[in-house]
Image 1 (cartoon, each protein chain N blue to C red):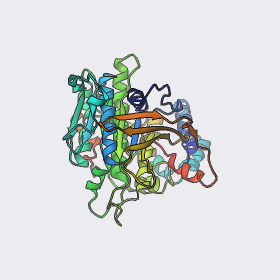
Image 2 (cartoon, rainbow over the protein chains, first blue to last red):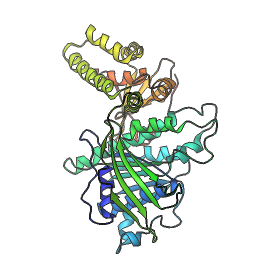
Image 3 (tube, rainbow over the protein chains, first blue to last red):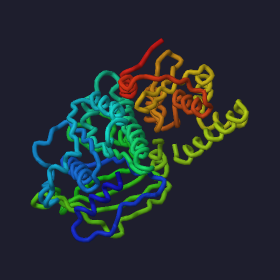
Image 4 (cartoon, chains in turn red, blue):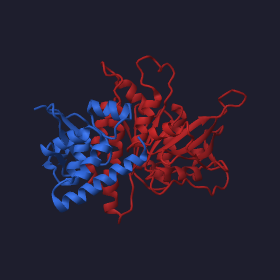
Amino acid sequence: MADILGVVFRRFASGNVTSDVMFPSHVEGNTLLLLGDVNISRSVLFLAAVTAATDLGLKVLFFTQTPFQSLPVSLRASIPGLKLESLKNVKFVYVKSLEDLREDIASLHELASEAASPSSLIIVDSLDHYLHGSRVGPLQDDLSPVAHVAALLHDTAAFLTQILQSRADGQGLCRVMVSFQSEREGSRDSEALAPELLLSVLDRYLQVRCTLEEVKRDGEVGQNEWQVYLSVVCPSQVQQWHMVLQTGGALEFSPVIGGEQQILDQPDESKQENERCGDG
Amino acid sequence: MGSSLLSVAEQLLKDLQRTYSETNQIPDDLLIALRFVFGQCALQALDLVDQRSVTCVSSPSGRKAFQVLGGSGHLYMCFTSCHYCPCPAFSFSVLRRNESLMCKHLLAACLSQAMGLCQQEQVSDQQMTHILSGQTEAST
């Protein structure tokens, strides 16, 4: 997934960009958690899907609760000369519930062995909406549902990667990209699971985190600017980009010079960091 | 639960696989190491292995999963590529408290795989979908 984001950043860069998205070799980088406001996350997911389908020729599955009423980014502004037929590689799957989402993902193996080309990118839009809708009964603090769907995505990607590699002389990778809004208005009720706890569970199965942080100027948001932080948990490493939503609706990216950081363990942060370095 | 402990656990399982394939038994030093790394659930997991409670389920598509028959008669599904178990102990001790690397069902699956003691079962692709999505859970 980190490789697709690298293509997105360079493709939609303001100016010439030589920086790339790089992570330590032991980090597979094919599973990514996208954190941020629901609308901008949806736009980034859509851009990733279109980039993967058109630039890389990959087959994409896009799971979402909400059908697209209009293009979330201005594709014509971002990609002049875009041919809509190249979007045929993107399949939108509208599923309403967590149970339906799990069943659809669990069933991907059924056609993979017969399909000419299995999906190389699986996108899940707003996983928090699915989880919020499933919280019923006395076990509302159970972390099992979120772990199940994240682990299922990880395992499905691993299986489809095997299929792709068996057909492409060892090449081929199935990637997963999941968006999640950790803080939702009105969601911090007494029965809600702490966002940090949910994120710690997701970190076990989604190795790379992409955080979209809206830029405030003079304490005000709505500048249509975001800082984009790409990080891995173990070892801690952060890469920083800048994203702007232009007036015409196009998204533009630029690297932040000197934005690569190796976060050294601090005495008071090492326990927290170790807790995040879970299995996956 | 640091990534270093996870690396130790992975190496321990590799050592166990090699030793068991050569000698058909687990030496005391490896047993002690298992107890040290995995805590109380090590012995419970070894009991499950002895009872041949772990089944590797596969379907025509090539997809695989583990099913572990717990002491209570519940059947727990575990993935082959990452650590997950639907049991309450995994949810509490691993996910919430981060006190353990695995529950006994997961560890039993890892041990059974390392020691070549998984039962094998073939199911249809549709049955595999039900298993992976958590719709299939049998009580005996």
